[in-house]
Image (tube, rainbow, N blue to C red; front, side, top):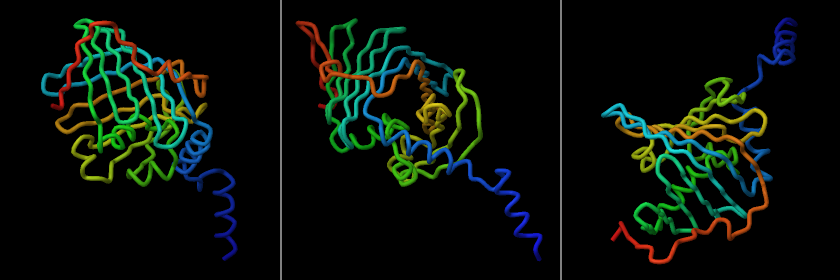
Length: 224
């Protein structure tokens, strides 16, 4: 009868009784407390399953979250075609310099959904992640030269599942922030985003996040 408590103590001491998912989520919570802004290089691969084709875009991302539910973002893609995406509150603008056109979108009720994916792992708490998703630990891996914990997220909300069947998230062991995430869409399509040269909480003036448009730019409103 004395053997069982001894074995439990041994397992706990050697780490076999520890929960790797709990450890990862605790690290995420710790990183979320201090998160205010970030800059990084990014590579986005959009895979179209029906033609088995990848479209790769390279650029930078600048994101600022001074307080909950207040997010500003600027993504500047340079390859293969220049494009700038700016998010300010409920307004999303996409500037296409080749045709000197800016497309303006009113996110409205979709803002919370879009913010959830844009902020995935950046300032996200354990509660926010687990309230919105069923979360599973997939193992320790190396991605883009970084040791990371790989998680699988399955959205709980039906409206989210219509857009994303599941999401894989790689959280860096060193920073607690994403090194990569992959969003699986219905039909076999997916979007894979990899971050590098990540800088957390740099000084980011509000002006740096605003879209700078040239004179004579044409405006389009695709929602109308």
